[in-house]
Image (tube, rainbow, N blue to C red; front, side):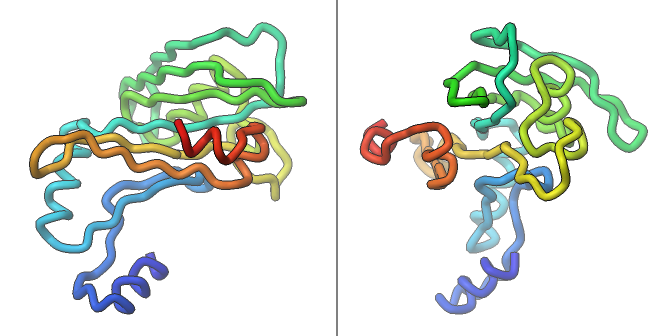
Length: 180
């Protein structure tokens, strides 16, 4: 938040930085910020209407019996309230000692992906809360893409970011990744 506000101030964008969406702490990835009130209202509306498609990458330790895909539906409780949650998961690739998955959450419940992996797949690497990993390890959960209809004109906008550490861990060549 402070970094975005500093960016706004440096570019003379007269707007108070406020995130449009959130990520579970300590997940990594993309977060939207608006540059003006009109943009903020349009982005908030897209999220409220569930018109923003989110894609995550997740990593687990390698395990026996991995499936090519999972459909995980369950009621998740948070702060005394229970709500239905749906997550689609697709096996992506294997690297030494690790499995990587593409994750498509259909609802936005707190800790949804982490809990669904713990319950139905395998705990995420580095997930102290839901996987018993040692503190200090990084959580291997990354929101790497959003797709949504542009508020003016309706064409599909895709925002993607795949950090170098993830490219290296997944064995993705930079040229191949940028061409896709």
